[in-house]
Amino acid sequence: MSKNFAKLSVKEISIDPAYQRSLDESRVDSMAKRFDEARIGVPVVSLRKNGHYVVLDGQHRVEAMRRSGSADTKILCEVHNGLSLSEEAELFLKLNNGRKSVRVFDKYRARIVADEPTAVEFTRIVQSLGLRIGAAPGKNTICAIQAVESVHRRGGNLELTLSVLKKWGCGEATVFDGDLIKDMSRFLADYSSEVDYEEFSAKIARHDPGHVLRRIKSLVDVLDRNRRRAANSVFRDIYNHRRAKKNQ
View: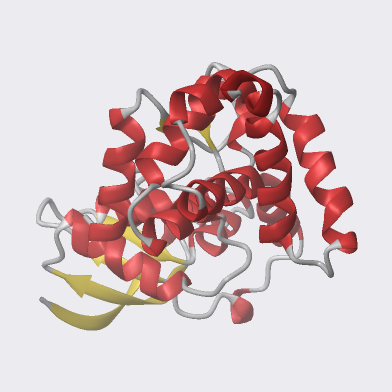
């Protein structure tokens, strides 16, 4: 692997959608209308074995040049040679780390291509339950990537948490709210020795997820903004409903 600088025309540079984020069309159009070559900077590209240049950082600038009619104009680029696809994705992540304009889902896709262990492991758990991680809500689809990763990093009960949530809402998107994922994980961890998961799943299935979220939020202020206590209180009430009479 090596790095050098070379002048390339935009028509020589392509985009690999395997790890690159989706283009922000309005942003590109705005950049193209007020195109200024002096503000292009130095895009970062990868030179592949087939001789193709693929942009790693600067795809919006490159596309704006193309749309402005400057595709033949040569610009200075930082060129990386000899990178594998996973190494390209890893470098993309490093270059875009901390940028708010890069969506969590776009970074997640790059992490998968880069074979990042944490992302690969929590994705395996998600998929083992017949679920998927996606950019938009849908049946059996989780968009709350940061919540899933947070639960996974805390250790141990991501599979159980998602399993209970899936049964609760039959895979509908409303149960995979990021706050609910974290709330459920903490509750199951705090009461692991006291809760019959099948009974709890059956009981909570009778409650609308949106209503449960509102109940939790209404308790947060009452309990000095302690989200964990508020969520645990709501889930305990649901689980213990009629249990005393049943066990007498």
